[in-house]
Amino acid sequence: MTETVKLKSPIDGSLYAERPVATDQAVNAAVERARAAQISWAQTSIAERGRLMLAFLEALVAMSDEIVPELAWQMGRPTRYDGEFGGVKERVSYMVGIAERALAPVIADDKPGFRRYIKKDPLGVVMVIAPWNYPYLTAVNTIVPALMAGSSVILKHAAQTLLVGERFQAAFDKAGLPKHVFQNIVMNHGQTEKLLASGKVDHVNFTGSVAGGRAIEKAAAGTFMTLGLELGGKDPAYVLPDAKLDHAVANLVDGAFYNSGQCCCGIERVYVHEKVYDEFVEGFVAETKNYVVGNPLDEATTMGPMAQARFADFIREQKAEALRKGAEAHIGMKVDNDREGSPYLAPEVLTNVDHQMSVMREESFGPIVGIMKVRNDEEAIALMNDSPYGLTASIWTQDTDHAAAIGDRIETGTVFMNRCDYLDPALVWTGVKDTGKGAALSAIGYDNLTRPKSYHLRETI
Image 1: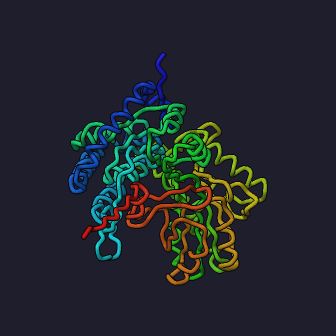
Image 2: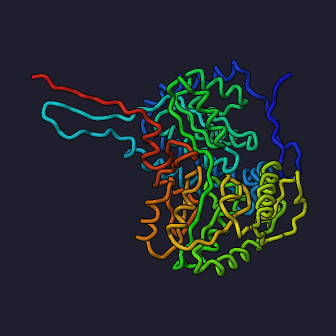
Image 3: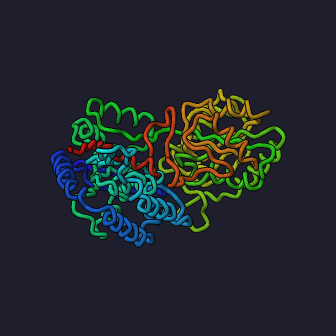
């Protein structure tokens, strides 16, 4: 009997899509085709690769009317937000635009009688294991730069967003990308681990859980392939006394609850200086109560269901534990179907929280946030660093130098001031501690998707 991957919609629990898992023979054949196609693709000029990437982008955006409701059915994001195309356009366009410069040889200092330089060669076959929460944005972070650098790409997308891989394939085919340079394959976990252990893949980029990242590292052990791992996060914010509070409230509420809180760099804990704590909490609670939770296909809905019921149940458990330990809940919103075993969940704001509670220490990845009062910078920095993760941290103040000085002391991959939950393609996307390793976007992202090759050419007399 043929094994299949089943996609159940969080909207109503129905089977939305089902696809057969590729056979082991088909997976091996796809990798061999990718290896063969990469040889000629690497000889294609960067300008031509860029033209094809922009054609891919145009083809993908042209599908937006179909993709936006499709995303709602697959993972629950409300259609009113029009998918992910703003960010996709920005990242693809930027990475194509800097490719000639970022991939240019590095010329060593002049030395008479020698030509010395370092070329940036493509890695070969790059595998992308993409997540469901931002299924287009996270995937393009690696797919487009890897292709621009001259590698071929194999995509294994998350089961929850199974159709996204097909959209990528259709857009690349429409753009005229040479056959087999990009391939979308439906695989199970066992096949993925087997492929990584085979040594037939040169680089893998994985976005997902810490446990998933450990499984990837274990599978790839001994192959010497390179890895890019974006794993857990528990991103903090610190609101200082001089912050513009209305701006901080509006942006931090959005940073905490957009996409039902299912954001890699979403705000999960907020530390507020005691001088503005009460005013900030009052504004944050009032803003949160404006959310409308419901069917993501309804234009009035601003928060859809979580992608799976078990994710929502985990948030319910975190909230219950926090309340048992003395936390105070402020929202109490009544939502249809908000019960155990349902993906529909109201947003929640907790105060009187501390770091003995799961909600302030363990990744929530859902619509819940804890707010703590702090006395000064020292206390805030210590609490922000009291986490096994380090993806982003945001600082809310009108003093740029002060924000930068605090940022120097925070264990994180990105420091924001007066904004959050955003990837700037001109800046490297990376993390520390259990958030993983590697880097995406910016010129440094290209360095992580190429292999340096030195040329030491001596002239003879």
